[in-house]
Image (tube, rainbow, N blue to C red; front, side):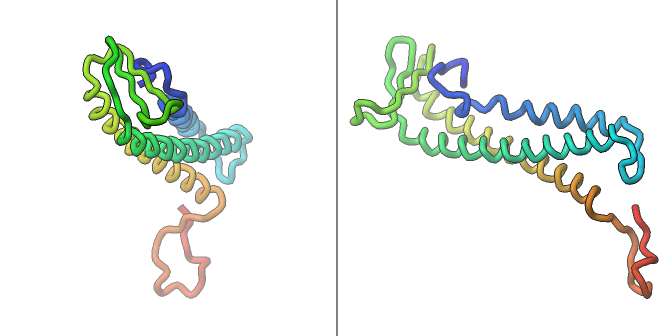
Length: 168
């Protein structure tokens, strides 16, 4: 979208939102390769876990922002009035407003492709960033739960006290 329309702002083409996921996945591989020490006895393990948690929560916030912007632009795209000017397609939000924002899509042979495919691109952005937000949320939750809560396995049906639980 950025290549065909230089008038779009960076928030309208959120290609940058995937960068945080690349960083989180690389950091996850590093965390996987570090030998696990119980109760984080190495500073490297603590720093990597903290950075992983911060990047996951940042990725969650960025993904939610991208979903909001894509949803706004999807609804805004429904009211675009486009006309062909030479080899470009020029779209205006409100034809009666002389200072309305104008979007220029360069080298587009048919304006129908903009009004029909652009909403599909916005929907794809929404679904992919929702999936990214879900992954970041689950990763941050697991990291938080591993650090501040205890995972137990087994059933405590007939056990008289909680000391018979096994920690995993």
